[in-house]
Length: 306
Length: 179
Image 1: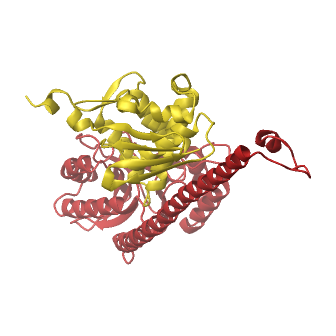
Image 2 (image 1 turned 180 degrees about the vertical axis):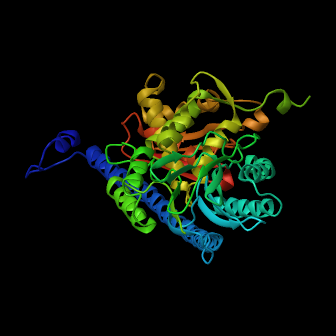
């Protein structure tokens, strides 16, 4: 006869197995104890499993809520995108210019905005703005700025005064919504143009000479300072180029910037070609260079007609 | 001044840490939340009962069927108490653990406060031959967790082959069988 402890230490029971009454009793309780442990384990894992099931059900429910919320946001963005498109000039193109425009927003609703205006005296004006951020808020700021420029153009002619008036009217609002916008605002005259700029990029090719825009004035909504204006010759055959930072600040796979110089050199090199051709060359060069699209891009190229 | 206002119910830090650690061990909470649960708790300090209630809610709000989970938390706490805490010095067998509850001795070592709020967790009767005992519990603690504490405390020394604990609400007592 062997003890229960000795028996349990064996791999297989001996052929002539005999246990004492006490050990048989212990074996009984050990077995019952194991069954009890198994019951407790089953109850515990069942509760854990229930919890997992509940968690998945809750997750499904949350996912449905999220999908609904996402759909609402998508609808809003679609509407905002259409509103934004309607803000951009579609029918009106300055008659004295042969003009080509590339405008691509990073998201459904972007922050780049350009527009053509007429001053009270009938002169053509071009505005190019890069509103901080993207999305619906940028589109709303865009609509706000369009309204402000339209108001200012009702009684002002000089670009410096116009941009200054818009900045004065917009400053409080833009600060409140934590937005700002670069601005390039050009008014065409006979054989010349006058511009006011805060942060935007511009270039004029007059015969063999090239001038770039002074852009040291602040962005709209950043400071309450007046905007100086500058006049450049802009006669028949001259080229005007305006763009936002989307192209020059794009990067290649090594993290190198495209740069303003590269874009300006390309424009100057092909300055004799039609605006649409120059635009195509610039966009092709940018597309070949950039690693990924990381910002809105707007490029306006215009040649003065006869 | 009322007694309860004079002396609120307090819980010993070791109990809270044991509870929190059990939740972490059982993956009831994990990661940063687990660290936050234990972080700042001191083993030798007394805390208001509300601190334990907060820990209890963590389980009660996370699970639909909490009975088996709270039981396992109680068991895990006592395994920790025995193997990594002072348990091994205080009890040498499963039955010892039961007797340790005489006169609410074990309970009083981790819960402090006026009798009216504290209740009792005390061994009422024991038949050693039959391996049966009755333990009365009127504490403000969770009964499923207490059942786990009794199972875990009695099984931790490793000398018992069978432990069964059932709560009898009508008698406010646990019926215990052990062999």
